Length: 341
Image (tube, rainbow, N blue to C red):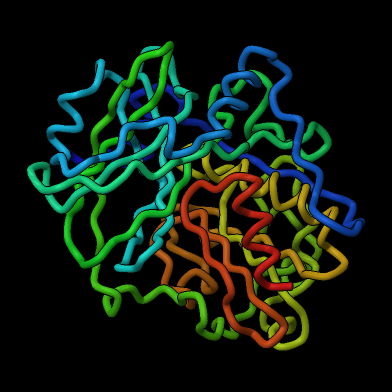
């Protein structure tokens, strides 16, 4: 079992492209944000609906078997699992996000759960249900290069698993496709907690100035690669810390290496419509002068980031209450927002 990076898998499936985001009007309403309708295709919506309603009862318990034995009991293999989370440290419930990809047909959407173990021949743990989380926003919040009606990349799988100690963990993703249990094998790596320099939940967020329309001299294209630009550049993190909750999103819609960056900015724009009166939404571009050869902008350096996209939710005291790495859908983004309110 080998780890297959998310970007590499997207390339193999022919799904690499620029990304984008869109703007919202900042309006707010009580309660949760309305869930996006999703793609217009009834067939795709049906698959997505089934893949979001997943319970452990739909899958066989590990039952003391090794991970290899669980794999050998499946009806078939074929798709590949590709991980969108790369920064993992030990903990009882660590978020793992991934896609199931067929190199011929693209993304696979079906009820899915994962099993994992410390080695292929160690006792497996699971199943851990991994419901799909929608990436396609409603039309008014879609950018030109993000998840669209025709884009097969419409959702991301997500679950939480126990990671007891550092090391490599073989993972088996099992999907229920046309009545068969189909497996996809991969590998995740867990680093020691002290080796993760990125600010974590419970820590104070770095007081760093993020780019604003004012700091860009009114030229929004200097600080936003989406088409058209978003409206999440009105305030700097440095000025908001300790005064107001913040949703800080690091992403470069146009320069992203895969389609995971634009959709998350679109989601931020749609959620801003509901929560924008209670929380400041900040979108921070990644590369200096929007040039990949010039290195990372200072805010990413302050947060010790090496990948993107990243979301940090910060409460009004300046403490981080949630962080999400890689691709994350509407449900995960909204849940993160609520931790900071």
